[in-house]
Length: 442
Ligand SMILES: O=C(O)C1=C[C@@H](OP(=O)(O)O)[C@@H](O)[C@H](O)C1
Ligand SMILES: C=C(OP(=O)(O)O)C(=O)O
Image 1 (spheres, rainbow, N blue to C red):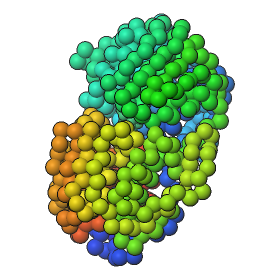
Image 2 (cartoon, helix red, strand yellow):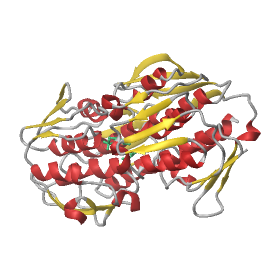
Image 3 (cartoon, rainbow, N blue to C red):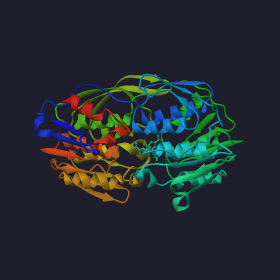
Image 4 (cartoon, rainbow, N blue to C red):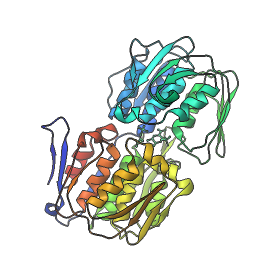
């Protein structure tokens, strides 16, 4: 029994795994569009000259926040749907000063990428904010390099926390050595560099997702990549393009883990983006002994795509850290569920970033899995998970964090008895059809 109680403002998801039987998970799953690519398609489409068409856009709350912000600055974005969205761009440098505060909702990507755009629109004033979670997340990581480029930004804690106010300026180019591997930091600076005179360069300690580089190039900007360094030629022009958004591997991750840990499963997850800067989860699950194969590998609109077939397997522990972390950062909560079901002790390290996501994901997943009977200890930069203790259904908190909510739902389907998860509406941030898909599998 999988039931969603929508009678209160905050929805409660109930999963009674005992009633699910032992037939496993079977069938084909289509996952929604990639969130990172959806944000970028809406933003670049808005900034470009001419029309951009977007097929397969994610209809989650986060891309809706991006669309609302850019509409408020003059971009004509048609009603959002996953078939076809058209964006009539207003041309680089032509954003209108918005009449009200721009609201990025729960979306770090919206706020951080947009700051680069706003800071570089001279003679215009912008105010930006977000929900309680986003207002608690650090913005200095983008505000400081933007200030080095000449930006004027004010906010709480010396400009580290939203609400923020931005007086747009003509910026100058920099070579920024980012202390963290973050696609949001890298993309913010590249977007800020579009209108500067000269080359903007970002070097990061490890390579983070490269969707901005790929899409900027497709829209006509000159972008070069050399190891962990990205160059963008200033005074760029962007031309609207057709964009096809592949399925989000971060959403596929829930089924990759579910199909592995639920005995007798055999799932085909169709049309998944397998950009090498995102496939850390496939490498780690393979090392843990998962049975996952890539079928029908192809390239769609400049991004590699495949269907992923997953069959159940006994997982074993592994150590996850170093350069792979930015390539699976959003999948760590569900990987913790996999580790709780694996034989042996899994260590997740170099992942302190998780403490400043929508929630402190290290504390959130450790606390909630322990409530279910798992053996998880927090480390400053990750988790230590002694796998193999049986999981028991109970009442759980999602911390209003979409990835925690969905990860706990996957844990619940291998637990004995009934689990309830609060704030289940949070799944709609990145995966509105998650609960219907879970129900369809049973
Ligand atoms: O650029 C992006 O689209 C994203 C980058 C990552 O954040 P960081 O850049 O903060 O690591 C990731 O966690 C987020 O979900 C999406
Ligand atoms: C961290 C995430 O997104 P954002 O930073 O855009 O809020 C996420 O989707 O897990």
